[in-house]
Length: 322
Image (cartoon, rainbow, N blue to C red; front, side, top):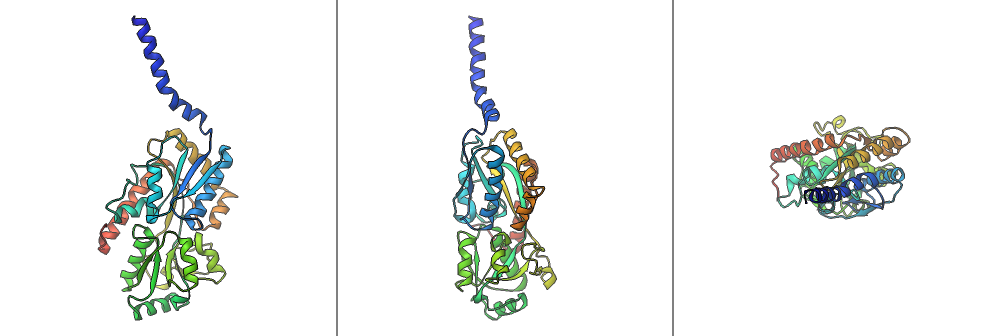
């Protein structure tokens, strides 16, 4: 009886352990989906698709990008948080969805760190203040003067009040005594036509999405938070006298909580190999994203630390979660 019981226990333990072992040893055996929580055409989508193409080529399986836009990236991020941790669902995290959102939303359905497995910080990009004909200016000094002369009249597009771009726009307004009308959109790609046709005046954006339009003269680039290779002729805010406005935006890869560490480590190593040297590095920089490819542990710390930084900034600006 004891012999039989022991054999039964050993067999049961082996059955329970098998899925975890198989998951690590045989993964991936089918297509992987990656949730991009913003519409196609913006910087997050472009960066995410470039990274997923590299994963697909290295892993030998399709990596299908699904755009799940809404609420500044929090809807799509919540889908990732609630998915099975089997390595077949990934997500593109951003400074907005995983650092700024907790500052602005009381009802955020996930914790930016605990609800995910951090895989890697892909890279960082500057912010650029862009505008169209409704801005009525071609340089930052003229733009600021026009906004001050018309308080509460010029429209400023954003991706919603849970995003870092919105927070930094408010910082810009309060620092210079400006008053603009916030006009929320689901994604940056939807803003560009409205900037060009004069529906909205300006937007604080990431050059990875709008640099081409600025270079072609379809939009005006007023200033960037750090020098940008994508728009090298656009001056920095600092050089134009706007001090302390040097923040950057980041993109990263996350997975549902409980992803086996060996899968997270494998993903990070593939992406680091793909983008920390040319030609991948050049492709990333062409989107004005500086590759970082930090470890899962380092990326988790970045998310946690940035959430605290943005909370401190929001408190300083008197912005409260809604």
